Image (cartoon, rainbow, N blue to C red; front, top):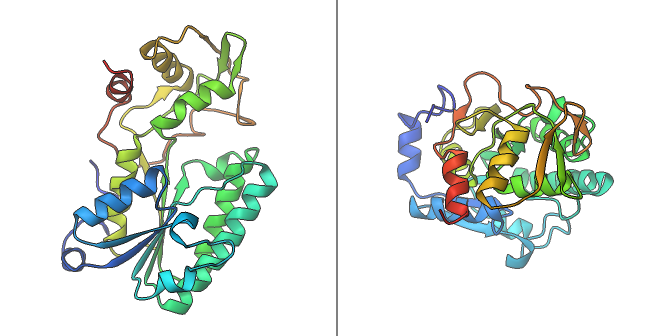
Length: 271
């Protein structure tokens, strides 16, 4: 894998810090990415706490939030909004972000890490992306040292993307480039960032291969023996947005995941 940045290299002070057990709170720690991240950090010797409403921590009501921050050095926010309605998702990320950052400031947390999405600012027609940009802006204005990791879409979302574009037996999708990533690789990148000094900026992680979106879904359907037909359409909207080759692909020098889409989809299909 490529290095995230010259500042995240695993040497010097970062090496020393990684050798010392830290308390790290993962907001959304019981979800897809959060559960993998908690496991990864615990295997590396750290006190990783999975914070979620089911474990007594709610960033909207603030229940359990101050107690969770006690002695915490690093917070990683991978929480997802429970409702994808445009207004609901914006309200969630703004309220959750404000409450979480206030609790971190009061507790002296030294590094806030957040998971966001590659291309968020390039697709203002997508309400979820607009909400992630609002979340990022809160983090940048908070005064807490931070690192934002923007990831491309996860392999695990491809089936949902196909379903969202299905009409009858046909799926109309943009042929714009798409560079999805395995959730395991996202969790690995987040673990490395959490154990390194904050960069006070944004870094990107993407899958190893850029493939047209329609082709990604076509391969997924083929591997899962799904008979729906994928039709390329440059005007097809992706959750409300028209795509081009830069919409959902990273900029220069992203960190690249190790797991290839074709290998992942074969494994999922049991091949």
